[in-house]
Each structure stands twice: as C-alpha cells, then as structure tokens.
Length: 370
Image 1 (cartoon, rainbow, N blue to C red):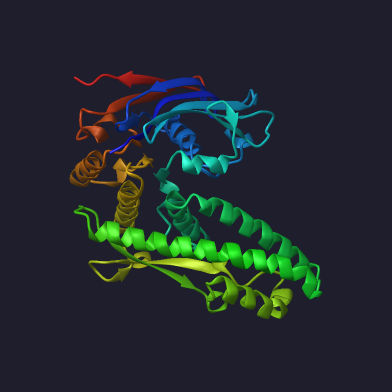
Image 2 (cartoon, rainbow, N blue to C red):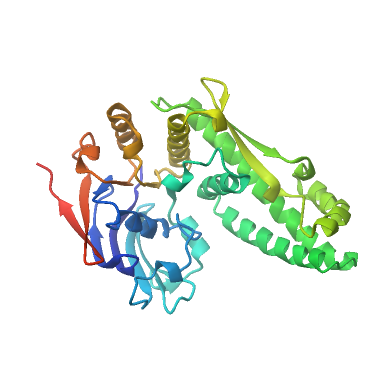
C-alpha cells in the first residue's frame, strides 16, 4: 500500500499561529490542549491541501493572524503515490489564496489529483436535522474524493446557474439568451449527478464489506418533484420547460442543486434525522471511515483524515475502536481533543502534539510518550 501523508507542515501568521513547524510520519497525530489554544486551526490548515475553501469554508482574509493582518503562508511536504510534493499556499492583503506545487503555480483544484483529505468537525453534527444544502455539500466532498473532475463540474454549474438566475431576475424572455447556458448546465449537472450516484455505491459497498464497530447507514439521493431529470438531454429539456416557472420565482427550480441526501440507520430502520445525537455522530464517523476504505481500494492509499474533537463524543470503548480502525486502515489521521487522556488507547506508533496559548499566540510541542 502506498502512503498519503503530510510529513512537514509550516504555518506562518495563520489564524492564532505566528509560526509553527510540525514534522511527522505517516501515522496518526493526536493534538491536545485547552479550548482556544489553536488545535482546530492546524486541522484547517491541513484541510487546505485539498480543493475548496477548507473545512471552515472561510475566506483567505479570515485566515490571517490578527492584529497584524499581514497575510499568511502554509507550506507542506506531501507524500503521494510514492512521490514527494512541496505545496505552498499564501494570501496577501486579503486576496484569494495562491497555490504552488513543486514551485509551479497551479489552480487549487489541481490538489485533487495530489491529495485526498476527509474531515469530520463538530459543525457537521447537525447534518441530518438541518437543511439540504449541508447534506449536498457533505456528499459533494465525498464525491470529490473519488472524482477530481467533480470540483470543476460543480464550479461551472454554479457559475452558469448564477448567470441564468440573473437573466430570470431581469425578466429576460428571449430563448436565445438561455440556450447556451442551459446546455452547459445540463452537461455539468449530469456529471455531478453521476458522480454522486457512484459515490453512494462506493460507500454502500465499503460499509457492507467491512467489519466495523460503528453503525452503517443506507443512503439515497432524493430530489424534489421539480428536480427529477438526471441525464444531460432530459435535464436540458427540463430547464427549457421550467423557464416560465423559473421566471416567476426568479431562480432555477430544476437541477442537482435541488437534490438531498437521505439516510437511514440500517440496523434499526430509523431515519438518521430521528436518531439520537450519539447515533447521528456514530453514523457520520461510520461514513467517513467507509469513504476512507473505498478510497483506499480505489487509489491504493488511505486519505488523510481530520477528526476535530471526535474523541470527546465517544466512550472509552468506542474511542479504542475508532483508533483501531484508523490504525488498521493505515491512515494519517489528525485528531484533536482537550485532554491527553482521550488518546490513551491510541497506539504508541503515533505522534502526540500539545498546543497551548501564550499571550494570544499558539505554541506547539511534541510530547514523547513513555
């Protein structure tokens, strides 16, 4: 099995970190310290080694250290498919971040071809009981891990839909203005839908074929009545047929942006939204692990995992099971917790990093285990 891991990470004026240098192997990294010390900021930095806005979906300006606001820089050595890549990311004066791979400027979407990063953060705990947008984003992050083209398709779809919505709001009725946009929407929408469907198939197989201590979920992609067409030709026809209603609404009512992810706790046959808080958390962990196993089967290496405060929501037995599954998978998992004791059952073949805060500056220290 090949390795996918960050072995060097340097943060400069990023969030609460004025300067932090972390060296580690391709093993789990346990990060602990008091609330507000800067643990999650490290995970956010690692999440930027994948396409998108990172696990907090923050702007580049929001990531800069205050009060200096000088901009920030992140560098890392990424082991990927038996090669080492030097990745640099930075932002100055609040501008969108720039990215280099091996000293060459690259679009951020290019990182999908070099690294795969999955995360689970406390903000996702309400995934099953809040709006469909969050569930679509959750599914699309998983789809992106399997299909690097998903990012480009999604960006093109969203940009084109904004252009179409502008025409709708301005009450433009000339069909010539809509034809090109609707063709592009249909083509990219079909790609998005197919990637999502295949992703659910990968997850289903990964769950049924694995021995795990976490509950499995039956997942289904559902649509509103106005968003059923899924193939390119039918979707284009649906956009055209829906123009009158869309004009009245001032927005596009058809397409994959109207989809939702429906989940059921398999063993109980209970919808995920009706499960207890603990069961919902366990289902999320199960899906992240299934995503990681499916990726490992596809690319020959487990992805990098980011698990923020995950240990605090599990009893000692479940924590031990989680750590055992991560170790068996061979994944580099960056995990945070407030207490060192939360990681007592983690294999000694791991790195332990203590994060503290001193006068508004985060400080990191590697802790040697006895």
